[in-house]
Image 1: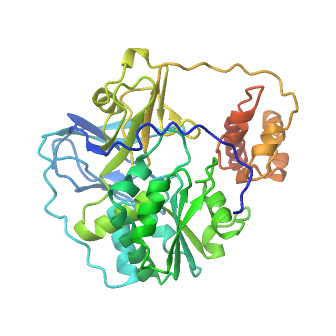
Image 2: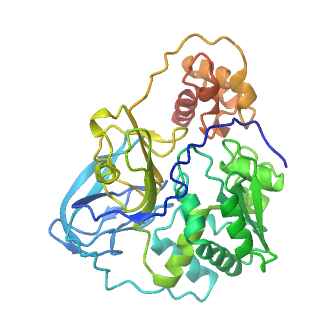
Image 3: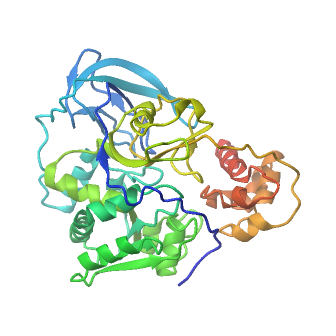
Length: 425
């Protein structure tokens, strides 16, 4: 099988055989008005309003934006502000829950009679990529080009995280039915379910479910990181290279996260929008590792409490995986649509930087054959033209360069800052 430069990581999939459980309803949720890559939504509720599960509480006409729905029933107690990871702020709707989880009376199965009505339903569901940047699903499935291959991303190559794996083991029929539904609506002739080879049970289960569907192929990927990155999984499964500035759709391909495709089918069946997330909770500060269903907006503190975290001993708290996750500064950080794990560690050693020794390891592991050390140097000296020549915009921030660097250079961080520098002009 084709493969790009990569690294091998210890999986630490402690929770892979732990069935997902319902998290107790939190006393209060905080729902940010930005949870995908689009612009902020405008709240349509005010303080004092009663809301229900699945009720639309915000929307926007801006490109890439998605409506936002209440994940709980209760009363709006505040419209506050939330600090995003990129340093920006957005409004957030705070809801005091009543514990009843009453569904909105407006919820009903979407009426789908055409491609346009299907895409409209996807937008109304609030669906976005559940394993990455949160790209709106209805836009991804409406390219200007003909789609020949639908790739379902079940790689889940980050250590610790098993939320997608539990999706495959607990609801495989939703995955297969979701694939068939999308293929039928968009007239896509072929689908590939791509799963890392270190998940043999999931591969077996989905092969069994797809055995009578010749248009669906289940492929075992090499167990290497970052196998789940969009460009990497496309190359591994099809041999096609997505060039700089090119979208996968221009090569006749669309990649959808495996939990996203399952959600699409669930929404078509019950009309309940995206209001909960399956979250893996793990790390050496967690006494009860688990997978939980959490309402969107749930504070991380509630999840840590449920998992019996040794809160006072936490030295590193992550939302997401150790390679691409976000370090949290507050236990009150809410779960959002793109969250898939909460990891808490009490053994964390800060690595001290030293000068680059020109060993070239960062170059040898970069899946896209970039020059991380040269990018870092150009960024430090504000050489925008050089950064463009070095194609830093191709960087997917997988962190392989930083992980392998013996000098502990913050290469991946420099790449992100370099891309921001280019955008400033």
